[in-house]
Image 1 (cartoon, rainbow, N blue to C red):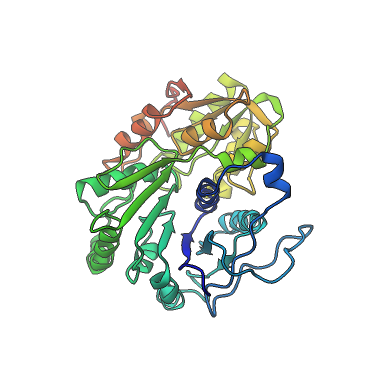
Image 2 (tube, rainbow, N blue to C red):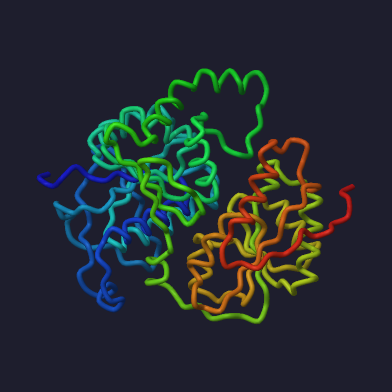
Amino acid sequence: MNSPAPTLALVESPVQLLNVLEWAHAQTPRRPAADARTEGRPHRHGPLLSGVPSQPGPPAGRRPQDGPPAAGSHGPHIVVLPPTDPMSRGQLRRVAALARDEGHTVHWQEARGGSGSPLGTLAALAAAVRRAERIVVGDPFSRLVQLLLVPARAAELVVVDDGTATMEFVAQLGRGERLRRWHRTGGGALSRARELAYAPVSGTARRRLTPRGGRAMEVFTSMPVTPLPGMELRVNDFAWTRSRFGPPRLTRGTDLVGTSLVETGVVDPARYLDAVRALTLEHGVTRYFAHRRESPEKLRALSEATGLEIVRPDLPLELIARRGPVGRTIVSFPSTVVHTLPYALTGTGVTVAVCDIDPAWLTAAASPRARGFLAGVTDTARDVRRLPAQAAPAAG
């Protein structure tokens, strides 16, 4: 292939893949919406990864793209490294179909369980990682992504949002700390031994992600972060989403966005149930948009206790809300959407409200960082309505 070495994007979640599409859209000259939708679509990119299976065919009812791949395209070559949970995989397949509609090639690489393994994935992708002049990642905390960055020689690295974790990533990088998820506690002796054994890989990834020696580093984000020296910061205002979907039809009810803080061990389940019940009564909530990691048992208990309609979205919430119908008010606990939805829904008349997390809701297993991080997510949200923490009765 005579074209320059490609941009390689490594994504593990639907939100990461959506934000790669937003980043790619931001790279191209803006055109009138009607023209962008009907003419001049980018061609499919040529094959990048020999021996790597392509994304399975599009869902029923969607016409696959015709014609052979065209050489010389310069958009990102996207590699999906799917998790094992069915909800995430289903959303990933649907966002991948949108990516194909935009002209991108999407490769589906099993990397966990079954036929996939991290070392097998490294063997399959190492050559492509070494060839890439630019690498786009969605989760710098991911051990799999960190492993794949070891052979990287890219002159430029880009981090797109995987949610509010971007805030912690930039902060930890600036402090020179090892990359560690904000909600993760120290764990036992076995966990510490694994961390020690993995330290060389994590250290290499951290050095790759630190701007230095002529290597460019970009963060493409909707989160409020302060760039480090040598780091380019660009705002993700969801221009691609707004150009492709909506504006939505508004309903009279209020929607509540669920969170996986119970599943990650940060918030007590009973406290969370009480808070959802209180919000439902106070704000006339009619629908609950479940986070893709929320357990069926938890959602069943919420429905029985509140009478809410439980919605399990098949796409990231930014796309669901933009397509509509959606409530005139969307209530959320501290999470990514209190930063992204105001961008995605700008000009639609929808109010986004955020309910604080009462420190009494936190479990004994919550990390010492949890309280300050969640407060920071709320305090830095723009164009949202602030709601006080619900005075839920003591659990048990």
